Length: 381
Image 1: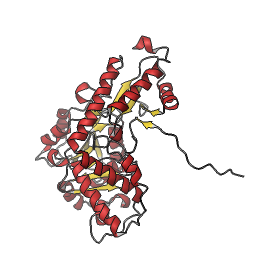
Image 2 (image 1 turned 90 degrees about the horizontal axis):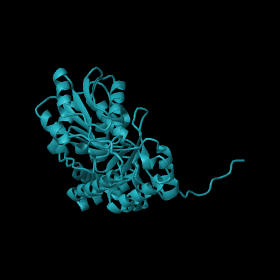
Image 3 (image 1 turned 60 degrees about the horizontal axis):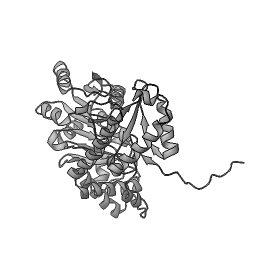
Image 4 (image 1 turned 30 degrees about the vertical axis):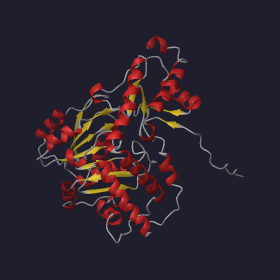
């Protein structure tokens, strides 16, 4: 006879990997509020507030802004599915795991994919992307990862948007690890489709993917001849999230919406410049301390994200063993390399509620203690 498990009591963790981060206490508390039905008029009012708060976070006054009811990859797939039709050309900057994922999804949709590659930890230079566009002037879409979670590299997105102004190609940006953590201005930078997630710098639980779509992209979507996946259909989602009276599309994840609402409200109260500065202060402090210990950071210094640091594992050090001891002995989660081709690394995030110097100091103290157990570390450092 199967034994019934005990009631759920997950252990306390400090989540300082590549995401999720620890949920903002206020966002976590919001999930304890009374559950409303997904067509309740009071919930629909809350949806309207979420849209307004998302516009602040994305700095997007026009177009369409809403959260998809799934994780960040759904935002990636939704953008590609809406902005590409079979046989159309897309140019993709690839410098890590998530650039490769864009390539894979675009290929599954039947697009003609032009890759512009850079090594792990490097950014894809804009001039190479523009050269690819000159070679493929009929390209319909250009995609870059603003914050490459697999390496900690940041793309110069504002400059790329400026260079593409007046051209017919649309610009799509993976902002999964950048929204709420570093400067991001959808309108000013000419981004046509931005997608993110709820569980990183925004500070809510995983399960939602906020997207921002320009008016220019919406016109392209209206002219499509091939259908898009029903669950990701932005026109149908618009009719639930924004149109009034609302039109049923899916049973919304109401408690996740509560948490996202509260997390975005905290973003607005703190103010974007202050929030960006807080992530910068914690991240740069952590990176300075890491380097002072003789450890190397993977990403280029001039293109290093503050909120996500990929630390190269010194030769002879048991990378997975360090992660395990950080978790079991100190209650701290850090990440490893993502994908079989990734260099040996630890990915350490200071995002959302965790973007503070005291959290950075706790991670550094634990890392120091764990590395003293590595016989090879002293010589490698």
